[in-house]
Length: 104
Image 1 (cartoon, rainbow, N blue to C red):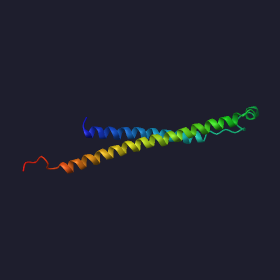
Image 2 (tube, rainbow, N blue to C red):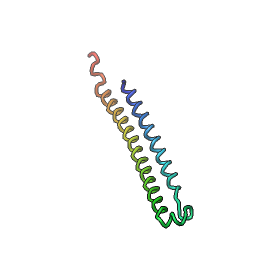
Image 3 (cartoon, helix red, strand yellow):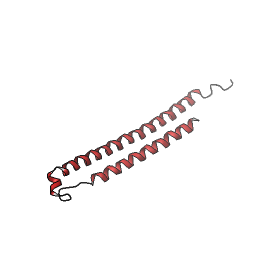
Image 4 (spheres, rainbow, N blue to C red):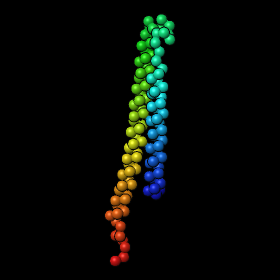
C-alpha cells in the first residue's frame, strides 16, 4: 500500500466509526422517549415494581447508547488524528530531505 492509500483507509474508517456514533446517538434519543408510567401499564404491574424495573432498564440502555456514541466518536477522532500526524510527519520528512540526493 502507498501512504496515500493508508491515509484514505484511515479517513474511510473514521467515517464508518463516526456513522456508528451518529446511529448510537439517534438510538439514545429514541430510547429517551420510550418512558412508561403506571397509566400505560396495569395497576398490578405498577404495584409489583414493573414500572420501576422498566425505567431502570430503559435508563441503563440509554446510558449504554450514550457511552457507545461517545466512545465510537472518540475512535473516529483518534483515527483522524493519526491520519493528520502521518501527513504532518511525511511532509516534514519531505522538507527535511529535499535536495539531499540532488547532484552537486
